[in-house]
Structure formats: structure tokens, C-alpha cells
Amino acid sequence: MKVREAALGSEDLRALLADVSAHALAYRTAASTRPHCPARDYQELRAAFNQPTPERGAHARAVIAELAALAEPGLANIIGPRFYGWVMGASHETGVAADWLVSAWGQNVGNAHATPAASACEEAVTCWLLDLLDLPRESSVGFVSGATLANFTCLAAARGEVLRRVGWDVEADGLFGAPPVHVVLGEEAHSTIFSGLRYLGLGAKRVLSVPSDDQGRMRPDAFKRTIEKLEGPVIAIAQAGHINAGSFDAFPEIAEAAHAKGAWLHVDGAFGLWARACPDRAHLARGLELADSWGVDGHKWLQTPYDSAYAIVRNAEAHRRAMLIAASYLPAGEDRHPADYTPELSRRARGFATWATIKAMGREGIAEMVSRHCAIARGIAERLSAAPDVAVLNDVVLNQVAVCLGPEMDVAKADALTARTIARIQREGVVFVGGAHWRGRQIIRISVCSMNTTEADVGASADAILSAWRAERDA
Ligand SMILES: Cc1ncc(COP(=O)(O)O)c(C=O)c1O
Image (cartoon, rainbow, N blue to C red; front, side):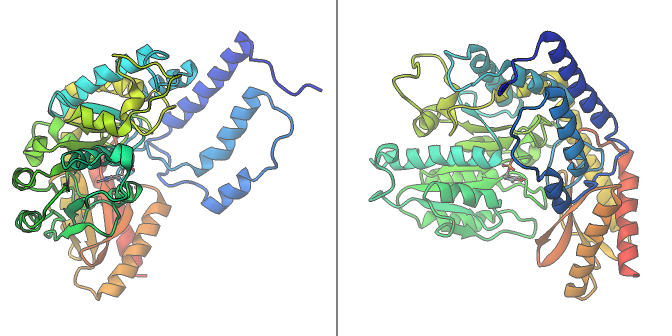
């Protein structure tokens, strides 16, 4: 019995890659006209994928054809021009092409000895990122899967360093018996910050939570009062780009108060950090360079394919101490080993896709896109707030718009209508928006983050949202 397919011959391989290329081409070229919501829901997809474990191998081309046929009806059109759900980039085609090569090369990037090209590429991209984001050039960068892991990695470095300064080696001795570490953050910190604190044994609930203002910014006076009272190791966490409002904390004041106390200041800048790469938005993130670490995504505003994010740490030694993976079978030495800066040993060579995306867009392309997205967000906000029973709750300084429908209505009624309006908008597929609870209301969240969105989408987006709202309101 034949139990294993031999490797494909070159003709079969050529045909297989041509099939993949044809699928990708058809998918991507239809993105501007395809509805933004998936055609089928989760239960339908579950049923479709529910097959018995394969007993015999199948031909590669048949496998890929079946995968595409099964999956495509359940894909959201995230690369479409009017996909405003969550904060999602559109997977730049050059980055995607680079990622195909990465898969074909089959590299495991943990160690520079095994994959010198991947390691050297990450080192070069480190310099580009620090330049584009204008962060301290001595910082180290870990190439991780998302901002969740970027924040986690930075906070691990923070935990190690603030404890080391009081004579405790957390990497060796853990947290049992360690001096307590105070964590100070804004009450509207992103939920994944709390995940990182949980993973690090710092606890999601034992934080000191600082009140925020009506834009979700941590109040600097309250931050100062909170941190002044503390004794011992302190980690402070600020935010660049609030998930609903796109607002920025007051970094100069926060950094001054944090450093007066010897605290480590971390900034969650999952998407907002990219304001620094855009001359007409950089003022929003002024003073952020004074922090000690920064988490930022590539797969959001930089448009790299998933998954891609960067853990940036000013104190490279603290970063390395927190993440170092050493074993006698792993070559050490002077070279930069990517696994020394991330929580993973074996992983994908993420640096290549970032390299290719930055190369394709250039500093000017990134700045133009960020500026354009912010102008589009303002344009949509203006169109929506011109309607008599629609309000925009945030100052639209970045790419986020928080929309309140029926601001004068009874709150429970308006919230229920808003939830129905979101479902209708998603179903109709012209645009895709998400929702959230913010400032006591159910809101529509609009995140302009796709490289394929242009000024021409402003009118169609606002019209689709308003017509869905009227249909639900008048039903
Ligand atoms: C401010 C902020 N922090 C962290 C995250 C988590 O990022 P990721 O999903 O890439 O892990 C997000 C995601 O939207 C975010 O907006």
C-alpha cells in the first residue's frame, strides 16, 4: 500500500504553484467589488469542514482546490476598500509575495547560525523601524505575532529590569518572595495589556487604574498623584491610539512623572505608533520617545500580512535577559539570534515580509497612507454627524470614529437599534463596521486601516451606514 506521496516533481510543483497563484489573483482582484462580510456563517463553515480524518493522502492540487472552495465563502473581505472592522490592515501584496517565499524557503528563524539571512534581515528592519518611528536607535526589536505578544514581551523586560534594580533576579528566581511590582495604567488600557499582565504573574486585577478623560486618555494629573505615592518597583503603561477614539496619552507629562519615580514606562501603540511615521500626525505622539518600551503591529497600519508585530525595548540587555533561550545544542556567540528577543524559539521568518512591505511603500508611501486614512476618517465623521440623529463621540484626530446613533433617544432603545444597524450594515456588505460599548453607549466603531481605502470611499461608506440606520430606526 502506498502510504506517502513522494515530493512533487517539478512539473507538478509548477502546476500547484500556478493554481495557488490563480486562486490568489482571483481573490485579490475581486476585493474591490466583493461584499465585505463572509458569505457563510461559522456554523455553515463548521459543517463544511467537518470531514473524517483523512486515511489516504490526496494529490496536492486537489487538496488546494478543496481548501479554497471550502474556505473562501467564510472569509471576510478584510483587504477590501471599506472594511472598517476592528483595526485591520490589508496585507500588502508585496508583503504577501515575500511571505510566499518565506513559506517556500521553509526557514526556522530562531538561530542566526541556521538562518543568517533571516536574522540579518531582522537586524536591518530593526534600523528601518526605529528610523521610521523615530525611536531611540539603541533599542532592540523582537519580531512577534501581534501587539498582544509585543506588549507581553516588553512587559517581561520591564518586570525583569525593575526587579533587578532592587536586587531581585526574576528570570532566575521567579516571583515567589519577590518585592511587589506596582503596575499603573489608564482605566481604558486595551484588554490585551491585561492578558500580558496575567501571563507575567503580575495580575490583571491588582493594577492601579488611573481615570481617563472623555477621549479615553489617562488623566496625567491623576497618573502623577497615583505614582507619586508608590514605593518600590513600578511599571507604568500608557497608550498611543485608543481602540475607539484613536486618542493619545499625554506622554511628556506621564514620562516625566514615571521617570521621577524610577518607573519603567511602556507604550501600547498597536496602531497609533504609526502616527510618528506621518509628518502631519506625528505631533499626536510627541514625547512617546521618552518611554522605555513600545509595542506596535505591522499587520495593522503598516499593512504587512498576518502575523507581524514588533516588541521594541530601549534597554536591549533587559529585553534579551527576559527572552533569552540558551541550550548547549543552540549555537551562541556574537551574532543576533532572533529567538533571544521573542517568546518563541521556532518561528516564521517574519522580518522578510516587513522588509518587503517597507521597501514597497517607502517612508513617503507610509506617511501618505496614514495621512489619507486620517482624512478619510474625518470625512466619514463629518458626513455622519451632519445627520440630525447621529453623533460622533470622539475628536477624530486619527483613523478611528466612534459613532452614536440616536443620541437623544432612550439609551436602551438606541443601543438595541444600533446593534441591529451594525448587523444590517454587515449583512448588506457595502461596508464592514464593528461595535463596542463606550461612554455608556453602544457605538459603531469605524477604523480606517486598509491601504485600499481612498477618499472616493467616504461618500459610499457614510451613505451605507446612514441608510441602514434609517431602515432600522423606521422599521
Ligand atoms: C491598542 C491595542 N493594543 C493591542 C492590540 C492587540 O493587537 P493584536 O491583535 O495584533 O495582538 C490591539 C488590537 O486591536 C490594539 O488596538
